[in-house]
Length: 159
Image 1 (cartoon, rainbow, N blue to C red):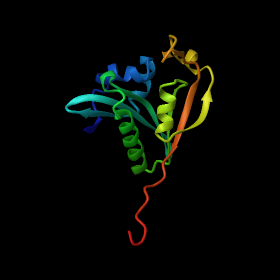
Image 2: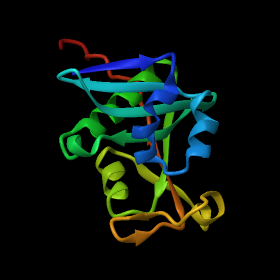
Image 3: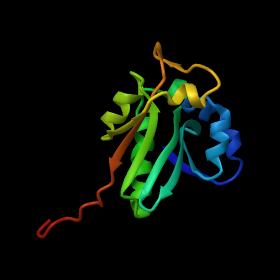
């Protein structure tokens, strides 16, 4: 398994990014200012993560998508762990992730250690040009999750 930073031709990853965010105009809006990472396993693209620095010490996962045939295999969790480490190394104190109130994504972020920070009612109808459905649920509110990035612990005396 290998995670690579994508420095050129980020648009080539648009088909996979559209799985994480169905509004292409929004993706194009944040992709240029985001660091894009791609996870490969066995030479095949399995997942992508667009990560942006919002302000001093705050980073946000703008997009996280796993190829359909690779879902439920830990690739999404691996990308979150990678993103947290990447941000921590750059002095990040908090990692945010915004998602719909979906029965698929809410438990995922909770299992990764995130906690709900806030909700933005009516976000999806206001920002998307079509209804967004996930797991049989119409998404309306944006749920913003936060993961506090404690610095790695150094071994104590005698360790």
